[in-house]
Image (cartoon, rainbow, N blue to C red; front, top):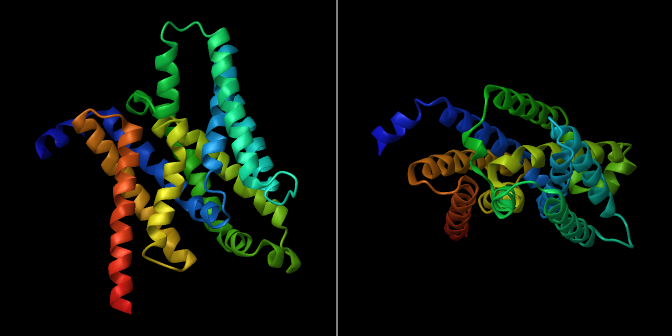
Amino acid sequence: MIEKLGMYLQYPFVRYALIVGILIALCSSLLGVTLVLKRFSLIGDGLSHVAFGAMTIAAVLNLTSQMLVILPVTVISAVFLLRSGRNAKIRGDAAVAMISVGSLAFGYLIMNIFSTSSNLSGDVCSTLFGSTSILTLTERDVAICTVLSIAVVVTFILFYNKIFAVTFDEDFSRAAGTHTDRYQLLISIVVAVIIVLAMNLVGSLLISALIIFPALSAMRLFHSFRQVTVCSAVLSVFCAALGILISILAGTPVGSTIVAVDTAAFIICCAAGLILGGIRK
């Protein structure tokens, strides 16, 4: 198996897949802790469906760069969803459900009406559950993903203290003079970028797993925000790399394999947390 793996790693497309997968997993884990603590765990699910709807529109218009449509639409939706958490009429979870189902239905309807593909079911399935596009990346795709990922990581590091404050007590932060709306907007933009990047890796329906599982796994072992964030990042990167390698060796779907590894890691962390809790007592 090691020899087989070494042979595969000689191919550029395998190295590209590993680089992009690791970068996406790292970015997803950083904001995952914030979204879980703010009770917006499913925002990834909602935004991924928005991105799916935007992608179908871009495909129908035959745009050469679908990112020009997908990213702005996803950012606007992220701002709406995060702001809806303070709306007494439409609470955050209801807004996520509403925009998620509506965008998914709208996207599929557009694909049915205007699609010229002879394999519509295959296109929809690959978009929702991930496709082999992660294994057909070009140097340009890797470069774009690297630049956006670096921007996400640098933004998180520079504004770490503000994100921490807004995450735990937004009202107190506002009273202390922090412009919470600006940082909510910043979080919205970063989350939207992560969603768009992750669509090719795990598909629209599985993106939430990249955000939720590493954060919840880390919370089973640690309790401080910084420790949970660092542990979440390490777990996410490890699971993504392992999932991609298993997928290549076993011929399984990339997205589903990564999520399966994340699930196994969560179960292990839960067991480790119970053991550590018993020892501390």
